[in-house]
Image 1 (tube, rainbow, N blue to C red):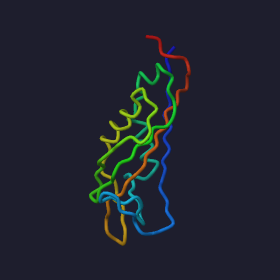
Image 2 (image 1 turned 135 degrees about the horizontal axis):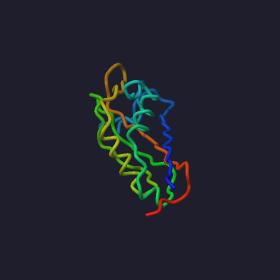
Image 3 (image 1 turned 30 degrees about the vertical axis):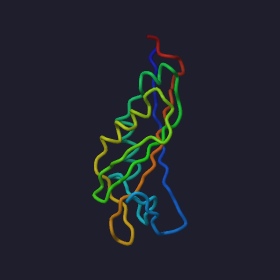
Image 4 (image 1 turned 180 degrees about the vertical axis):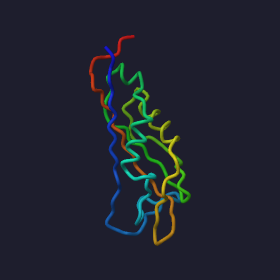
Length: 136
């Protein structure tokens, strides 16, 4: 039986009480205006849903859960330094990194009216519609 997979995407936005940016390795953890995917959050979710493919190993092993990636949106809107903070295995983390590399330029974050590099955390949830393992 074919497994039908659904990828649910959740976006976590960092929020801090202070309006000042916290600098780490030339990138802020927060900015007054956080970076935004072109077209907003709904467009980001659509982009991820169109491009992420459930890895076969993860399907076979019935792996589900959340992969959390972290990357920098630079002052020019390019995405760089993508890493996986939490992975469920089965190739899911590698798949999220692959798709992050496909992302178009973002709208850069701003602090005090100037563009700044900002870290962005992106959780991607992997869930199977059908829990029957793939037969090889």
